[in-house]
Image (cartoon, rainbow over all chains, first blue to last red; front, side):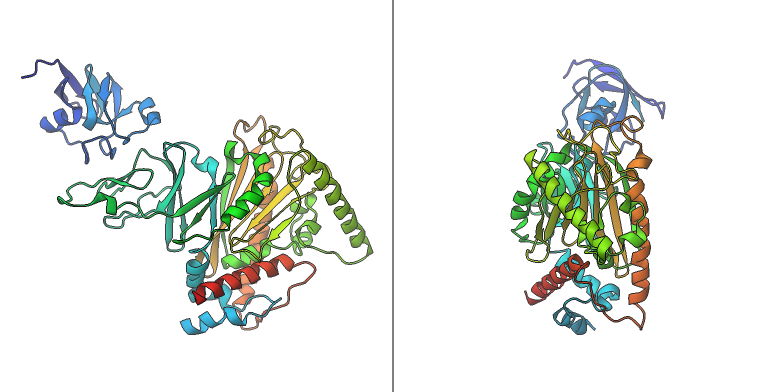
Length: 91
Length: 413
């Protein structure tokens, strides 16, 4: 059993708020809560799940599905990102 | 009939315009797309269009849809722009920047090197390594991007690259930016556009803006009459003097002509310009204050570079204009013109776009109109091949010789 921290993830457009453990990727937490986020590869390759991270920090382990300039513009891939704080996502 | 069309190249009359089907017949267009555009080095764009990792440039040439990518190691790659799954077009936009090349249909995901990295829901044993994007050969000639769809591209590209690099390098294309780009649908077969480019017989009558700066003599035009001959003598003396001066400062200038005797046909020469002699502008002065590369001399005339089958280029001290022609139908073609300035040049401070593009924007429109008139005539019952002027249309003849030779070689293979 993990006793990792639990963070809240707020989806700003839908108004949904879900919980996400520090050892859980954001996509899984969102899907488990019934959110519909487009995704395909689940390993940071295809970029299908790309979202805007309005606030908060994540630990993202992508495999090229997002470019540095997109990250600099506030985008991230929920499929390969674990929360480091409470998050607000534009979705 | 296909059989008839394939017999036409062998009976082409030397020194005469091509027979009408070369400009009108969809079966000839198919031959052109297969044997000419499918088997030779085709100019498609410039490196500043794909300067950053992840940048993509798409180009369609008849049935060939191509994407050129810049990968994370800054290498250029080129592929057929079609998914190996269900055949969907991968990238729609002419210019884009991507992390991976992802098919919009089922998200098959390819690296910028074309390798298939991810394909969801495929069975165990599915071999991704057999489903990478189909590669297209790509080469950069000092920043000019050429692709070749053939399995075995013409090997003499290397000779052209070696010969041309000293001419192009001073203009440092890689550190330019695109200041403007213009697409025109030419109302005629692609060869009418190319043939029009290869002579300046028509310049004095058609191009008041262009002839402010260029000498028609530089494009194979040999005038007749005492006054015109004096002008030609003045021009050739100027060429000799300036070629010496320019080559002394490391700017290659003298003519090289392989338009008709190489598979990868090309020609180049740095030509003087009129009056101030600086640039192809309305006042013959530079349009951009920031000169290209490490150039310090404004008055470098204009380097012309022609490639078979589909491009020509003008390189000046301050800007570059490139032209690419792509067939669309038997009787239409795309002319893509791109103006480049130093990447640090600022519009409104170092250059005014209207002034930069004025000459070739006007000249393109005039040429397009002439191509339309030629197209309107060659499709009529009264057309029969007419004679080229040996004095002024020698380079058009070389285009036709190259084209017919390459068709014959392709048909014989």
